[in-house]
Image (cartoon, rainbow over all chains, first blue to last red; front, side, top):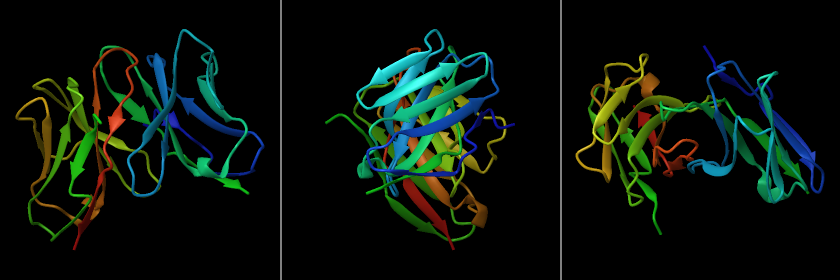
Length: 112
Length: 113
């Protein structure tokens, strides 16, 4: 059972435009979500998080939106830069378990 | 800098030959995790420790074992690696507080010949 789904395996965006990466989840117990970026041959690095009590969190060029009723998150990157080209993972977790379940990732390519 | 360190970065083993991957952390975090990631797939949680309390995922094969001798170190032992165990193995840590992010190491890419 895939509790976290990223249905777009890849996305290409022009430099300076907005990148929107989507994530859906099925586990209604999730109360915290994380986004990570991963370059080849490196470990994932943390980008931004959101608690289920919020519907938006912003950090510089990165904004995450949460729609609990739809069990859907999106990560917006504005403006996109070539250095943003990487694989992006979302993960859901719930209190008391210390565990996060990851999606399959979306490969973002920002074209110069 | 405080960090999560995995050794080695690349590991080659033979089919059926036991192999151990190591992870150390300087963050003094309570929780340590092992994830397995195969190409184009989600990182899959194998198990995690909260302090010395071991938590195995239900679908983690018995072939995979782990040890955490102290707060700083955690090991992943693969007793009899098969070709299907070739993957990137990621170690991560967390303080265990609600919403605390995971800090990942650079991973160990395991090849099985």
